[in-house]
Amino acid sequence: MADVLVVEDDPRMRTLLAQSLEGEGHRVETAADGLAGLIALRGRAFDAAAIDIGLPGMSGVELCRHARREGLLVPIVLVTARDGVADRVLGLDSGADDYLVKPFALEELAARLRALLRRSASAGGRVEVGDLVLDPPAVRATVLGRTVPLSVKEFGVLRALAARAGDAVDRRTLLTEVWGDPDRFDGAIVDQYVSYVRKKLAAAGAGPMVETVRGVGYRLVAPA
Image 1 (cartoon, rainbow, N blue to C red):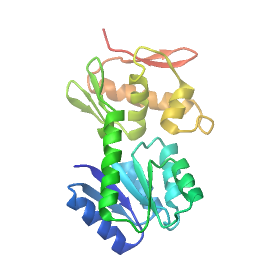
Image 2: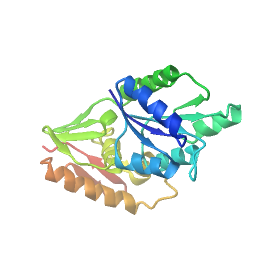
Image 3: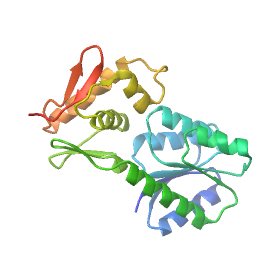
Image 4: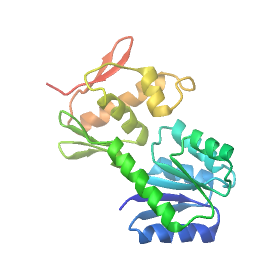
């Protein structure tokens, strides 16, 4: 069972996709336009998303780009009636993981989502640093079994540090991995989010795990 977001402006198709995926055992949330879809992605850690390209206001491609720039790592299938090579390249270059052309069998969408979920699970295995445990597919962090209430970006910062535990990680690397564009954001935003992460880890009983490396960035260590 997975949490799946469906973003589709056609009411009949939106209902059909939701019912089909629910029939596969998934929990499904829907949105009718690009902005609503982006707000949904910001507010909840979905396991996968199926997004139509031809959405009103913000297209599916624009939605995908915004999501990646904001560090939202949810696997995305773009759905569209456009089947040209250039259209597929544009969709994949926007950060989508897969591309499905209409008309398609509902079973094919379900199969592609299953494949993305398998890849996501294998690529984002459990990470442990001392008493801290990260579960990337679920976007969840725990300390001695207690959940650390992190936002998606806070989790992204902690995950990037945990993947290099014991090593110094510079701000540009964190900007690239969490925000997607190191030239669009100032390094001060990294400092702010590290401060958030430190406070939440401390509140969960993790102790001082994030060290400042002067002139470089930060390092995650297990308390002695």
